[in-house]
Amino acid sequence: MSGMNTPGDPRPSPTINGGKLWAGGAATAAVAALIAIAGILLGRGLFGIEVLAPKGQGVWGDASTGWYALGAALSALAATGLIHVLILTTPRPMRFFGWVMALATVVAMLAPFVTEAALGVRMYTAGLNFVLGVAIGSLVAGTAKTSIVPVAPRPAPRPYPRPYR
Image (cartoon, rainbow, N blue to C red; front, side):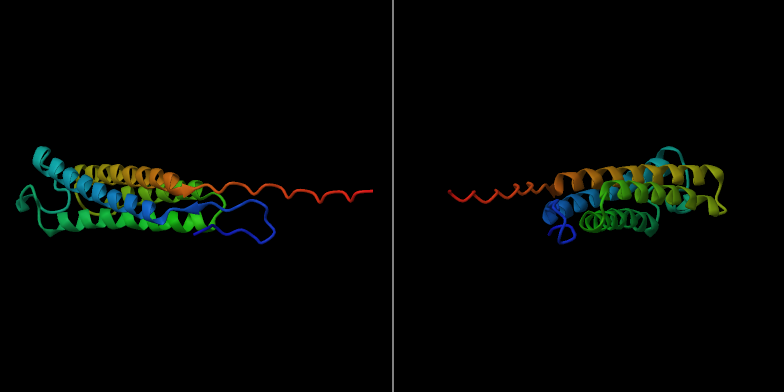
């Protein structure tokens, strides 16, 4: 697939290796899910912090641990879809992606603070969301950069030969 250029634009559009991009996105989804699980285990098991479920649920918690990990994985896939669309449609896709990821991470960090949970719980969950946002943003951006296939510029047309006199 190639990016969008106007017909008269002399600059060639980069193409993207979609298979490589989405394979990296799937790997990022797996990493994000594992970060979420490790963060929950660390919070509950080592620090005794109720990350997602009441303490009585044990270290593994209830189904919310799985849902949190699934949400992290789906966020990585959504980020992959976003960068794919941005590469195909925008002039500076990595810059826009960086802004979107930074703002999404800030929103994810602020979300725990609208709950009535204890401050320690809110701080830990915000920290876990920060780690997830940085991991997803950096891994997807790195994959996207390696997935872009630069197009060699077309050589300038050769002038017509002068007629012999």
